[in-house]
Image (cartoon, rainbow, N blue to C red):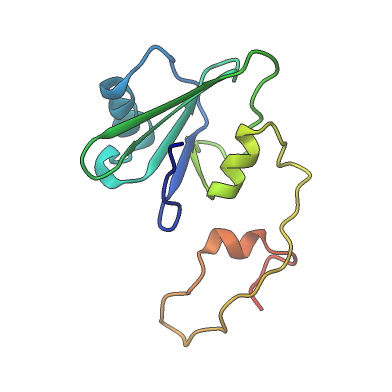
Length: 142
C-alpha cells in the first residue's frame, strides 16, 4: 500500500476540468499554467475530468514525481461548490479529500468543534489556518 505523509501536505483541487490523457509533464505544466502553483513544492495537486468520473493527482516526493489516478465505473465525484468568481482551485485537508474520493458529499457535512490554541498576541501569526477557523461553528475562533 502506498501512503502519503499528511502532516504538512497541502492539497489543491483544480475546479476546472482537465484532459485526463495528460501524464507527468502535462500535469506539471497544468499546475504551473492553470493553478499558478509550483509542482516541485511537495504539495499535492488534484484534477478531475469534465464528467468527474476520473481523478488524477500529482505531487513531488522529494526525488521524483508521483502520479495517482482513480476512475469510477459508476457515479461521479462531487466537488465542493465555490461561490466566488475566478477561483480556479480550492485547498482542502486530507480528511476532506478522502471523503470526496470515497463518494461522500461534503455539502451537508459539518465540522465538530475541536481544541484550538489560545488567542495569540496582536501581530503574531495565528496557530491555526484561516480556512479552519471559517469552518468552525460560529465562524470565529474561541
